[in-house]
Each structure stands twice: as C-alpha cells, then as structure tokens.
Amino acid sequence: MVTRHPDYNPSIAVHPGKTLRDELDFAQLSQVELSQRTGLSTKTISQIIHGEEPITNETAIKFERVLGAPADFWNAKQASYEFTLAQLEEKKRLEKEVTEAKKYNCYSELVRMSAVRDVVSWVEKADELLNFFRVDSLSFVPTLQGVALRKSSGDFDKYALFAWLQCGEHLVRSITLSEYSEKKLRESITEIKKLIRVKGDFFTPLQKLCAESGVAVVYTPYFSKTKVNGAVRWVGSNPLIQLNSRGVYRDIFWFTFFHEIGHILLHGKKDKFIEFNGQHESEKEKDADQFAQEQLIPSAAYKKLLEKKTLTPTEADQFAQSFGVDLGVLVGRFAHDNLMSWKAVSAYRKKIELPDPLLNLVSQTRGS
Image 1 (cartoon, rainbow, N blue to C red):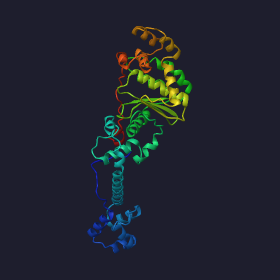
Image 2: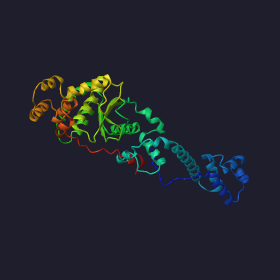
Image 3: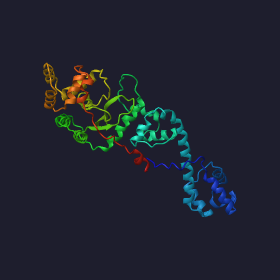
Image 4: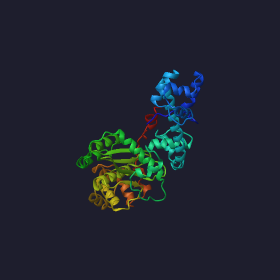
C-alpha cells in the first residue's frame, strides 16, 4: 500500500509548462529562440507551455543545457503534475464510492479493531474501506466472499457480515499453517477435546493444534446484526474457521467449532458455510450438527443418560467429564433438546472470555 499524506490535498494540478514560461521570461528567451537552441519544434514548445504535452526525460536534458535548471528539476515538476492529476481523479472516484461505503454501518466496529482509521467524511471512509477490503471498488466486495448465505431468523446486515469475514481474511495471514491434512485433523480431535475443560487460555493451543493440521482458526468480535456464530471457507489450499468471541457461551462456542470441523471433514472444499444462529435447515447443516453432537457427547451415551429418572448436578458433571466436556456443554444440550429451559441451566453455562484481536491495519498500510 502507498503511504498516504492526508495533509496534502491539492485542488488543482499545475502543468510544468507554466514553470517553463516563467523560466523563459527570466532568461529573456522567446519560444523561437528556445526552439533554435534545443532542436525542438516551436509547436512542441508551445504545446508544453499550454499544458498539452509532457516534459520527457530527453526534453528535460535539453532544458537543463539551455536554461540551467537541472533535468531532475523538470522531471520532478512533470512527476508532481502527473501525481496530482492522479490524486484529483482518485478523489472523484472516491466520491462515487460513497454510496457503497454508507452501507457499512459497522464502520465504528472496524475502527475499534484498528482495521480502519477513525475519519469523519464519507469520502475518507470510502478510501479506508477500499484499503481494508483490498479492492479497487466496493461494488466488488459481495463477489469476493464466496460464502453461501443462508437466511437467518429476521434480517441481518450483509455488509457487516462482509466486513466480519474480511477480518478473518486478514487475521489468517498471521498464522503459520502446515499443508492441510484430513488425517492429521481427525487425529488431533482427541487433543482438541482436552481443551474444552481448560479454564485459562484454551484458544492459543487450539489454534496451534489446528494449524499443525493445516486448518486456520481465528476469532473476531461479534459485529452487530450479523447473526452469525461462525463461518468456514477455504483460503487458498487451507480451510479457515472463523468464530465469534463476544458474549458466547462455552457450549455454543465448542458446538460451533466442531460444526465447522464437520463441514471440513464431511463436505471438503466445494461448499462454504456461515453458521447463522439456530439455522441448520439443509442436509449438510444437519450433517455438521450431528458430527458436532457426536464429538461432544456421543448419542448412544446421551440416550442412556436420559433413561435415568433423576440426575443430580454432581452426576451430570461426572458424566460430562467422562467425555471430556464441561457441565455447561451437557446442560446446553438439555436445553437445546427442550429437556430443560435455558433459564434453568443458565447457572451452569459459562461464557468464554477472549480479548478482541486488533488487526492494526492502519499502521501496516499507512506507516502511522
């Protein structure tokens, strides 16, 4: 990315022909005399003075010999003029991007992640969003994500979703990934399950275990009105699992994680999915749900547990522990299956606590 200079905001581009005219006046030379001394036609000199032709490298050398000002001086004048023209054209183009930029109501959420600068005008915001999405026009963004959008209950903000997904694209660049191996991923599940009951930082070892199998796992804050728990898609030759970290209960987090693992193992590269809250209507979604359920609490053991007429919290915890999950995962399953109310199990469900990651794209792309 080119380093921006926000204090430099020209309103007009000055052609170096104006400087040439001033230099001729100072040297008391006419255009005809300059033509005679340089071998350039009077037409060419007139066109340069009137801003119709550029000063080339060869012309700059000729002017240096006749007028004394170094060739670098003339080249710099020409380069400055062309750069200013480009800036003015860019400004016009950015003004056309404002309509698309205003669709990103999540801009403040991107600011909090240090993904974009906290600017005021929509022209500046459009510029920031173009850098964030790495596109030449925001109209290209919907075609980039390549994720099958399934309807959630009620409306969701697809532009906030695009931004949330792009955060994952940026975060994956900081992860060192092995070549993807389905065999290694399946073998790593046992070790991954041991992290479910970890009370401290479980995400770092989770990310490491998955990376060794060639799977990128990232978490991002929940963006308002996106209504997603997670997403999985392929970036190059590696799958990327993106999860939320804000206000998520352990049972939801781990179910979503294994649901996405299920998509990778069962459905491969072809399909890409977003995990909308409570929306598992397709057969592939049901397959991924079943995979997650089996990894957390095998159906045969779960069915046998339900045969008990009474179940104390201690017995429930012992059962959960026998399968490597915490009590919150088990009671979350009870509530999901309408065996208990969500209110009744709330005391046993714990939220994950992960610091929101900072992308620091502002300093990376603008040198600030």
